[in-house]
Image (cartoon, rainbow, N blue to C red; front, side, top):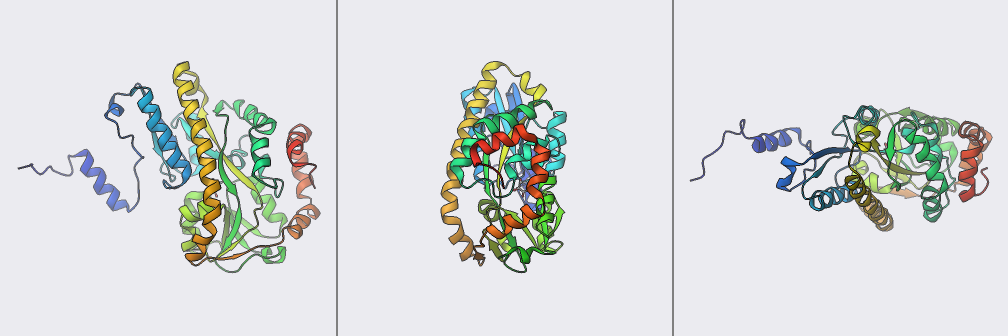
Length: 346
Ligand code: X2X
């Protein structure tokens, strides 16, 4: 007979109990190998995306491959879904070295590295080919060089979050008039606040960790995010309308604590960099495929879609001085690198 173990002394059972009590995945996506206990380099990777989002599925694959190919020397544990705190908090943790790798939107990173928000300028990218030529080209290189100055290492390829659309529990957003006084959650970032203020809305800065509950309790009426996140974070449960504004492109840089990164042997650095690159390319492809089917899936879950003409939104932003303000803030060098891909800004 198998003896029953006291759940409170069994690590595994305690974990299962706690997980059940929390009602959520409160534990890292652990590497399955028995090598994990003895790894020479134990590293933590965290982000704000749900565990089921392609970002975390591909990063889990990368971590498994790194563990296997390093024969157990390098064990990267994943902490998705804000398990280690909200974005603002995790950014401090990667700077102090409490987290080794943190995936963050360039626009939120803007609070620390101002130019990192440049890709979020409203309506500047017309399509994905333009996004990837800029981000994998001179614009991305310019941003990564600025990030390096705050002692964070950035991997070459950004992950795709996507083109962002506005959702609401109260009404569809069809024209700028619908945004007047609209209570919208935005991530903690000056560009986001400035954009929605210029459009006449009332933006509230809230970390993603609090978004579902603030929509549920109606602290805010709406939010904006790409479809894969609206789906994976189940925002359709608390939002009725989805207005396809595609008002900006947003992506994640993988940020590493600089000191910790430099301390890794070159072969380990090369192994990690190669798998993060592979993961980014696969993730971009996942998002591309998801974008084709998600609208139908979200409609089936009860969301109502509309397709606003974006011209009036751009005009309101121009008139409010939004583009002028941010051109000045980012400066001619960075704006020149953006315009190389997008054409002259409004
Ligand atoms: O906070 C958000 O809305 C999210 C998840 O899209 C970002 O990381 C910017």
